[in-house]
Amino acid sequence: METLNFDFPLKVSPFDFIVQEVATYPEGENYFLYKLIKRNLNTNDPYIVGFLKSLGVRDFGYAGLKDRYALTSQHISLDKFVGNKLIHRRLGKYFALLYLGKIPFKLRTGFLKGNRFFINHHNRLFSTLGYSLNYYDSQRLSKNVARGRRFLKQEPSKKWEKIFWINSYQSFIWNLTAFEVVKRKIEEFNKRRGLNLLKPCKVVDGRVYHIFPCSRDKTALEEFLQGLKGIKIPLVGYKVKFSPEIGSIVENLLQRGGVSLEDFKRWRLKGDYRPLVVEVKELKRYPRSLRFFLPKGAFATVYIKQLWLLEKV
Image (cartoon, rainbow, N blue to C red; front, side, top):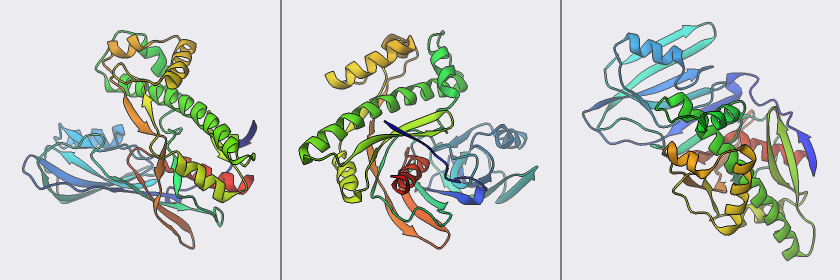
């Protein structure tokens, strides 16, 4: 399998990677809705959380974590009114809060439609694709995976950090399962067409890698990705159902990691089903940026790697 090192200058500056959360919420009376605009900070960064606590906020909710090394805007819910507009800066870190109104509930993970991205294309990425593989990327994986596997074997805890790391291990297993499915689907596609139009390629980005279909035939690549619509791969947990094909892949991966489904049951992690591909909408190329919309949970960095790969094969 051909291996390529991802060398696209993705986040040289926070302004190279701009994220706008897309969501709508009903009016209510229980929580205060704010727009959080931040740069070089995580959504749940101690710098933000600590500042809110100093203002008397006890309950802080959000629909999704946004990239740290980026300029992002999203909605958050607070149990206390902290003003119409707040701006805080320190040592290259920045965040602002803009009051939007009141809503009936605390924001929780998944309470959004998706995200709109504006990515600096650096006069590259001239080709686009209508679908993106739905892999997890380094924001979720990296060093968190080993910690998650280790914590999974320990006694259950309600500490969100430990659960976050275990979720990273779940995401890692999902990726490895998806890689196997994609490789098998490439073989099936080539066999149906009677030609080797696609091949699997390994793209390495630091500690994280992905398996993508490679082809100089963009039409064949689009057809292949569109053909993956409707396929959902289980995010491992004690309540998800596995097909015989997927079950054998997951069982082998868990055995190699020294864990079992019983470990997920002890932690009360039910699992979920995640689409293998997502549709990319609102595609438009500007002089300096590429705009597109992805549904919730999808990683823009994975889509950029697919476009980058089109330049390399």
